[in-house]
Amino acid sequence: MAYFAEDIEHRMADKDDLVQAFNPTVNPSREHRRTAFDPHFEDVLHETIDSNFDLYRKIVEDPKFGGLFKEFVFEKLERSLRRNTDART
Image (tube, rainbow, N blue to C red; front, top):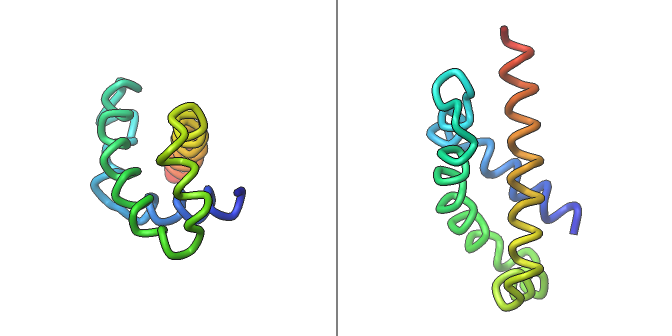
């Protein structure tokens, strides 16, 4: 599962508009960052169906697990992008 989460995180980090939305100087509201994150997460999740169908199915069919997984990826991505932003300043 860790590899799957990292794969999704890396795919999302390649989306320039999402990276821009996570920039706290551009978008200081965590709620707005979450709003930008959600559709990208769904898109990337669907792109990864072939790499791990069983985990994809569990994320989609089990709302509690899916919500926890989505939150986990959001937190990882937010920390990663914040570190990258801080390193550039």
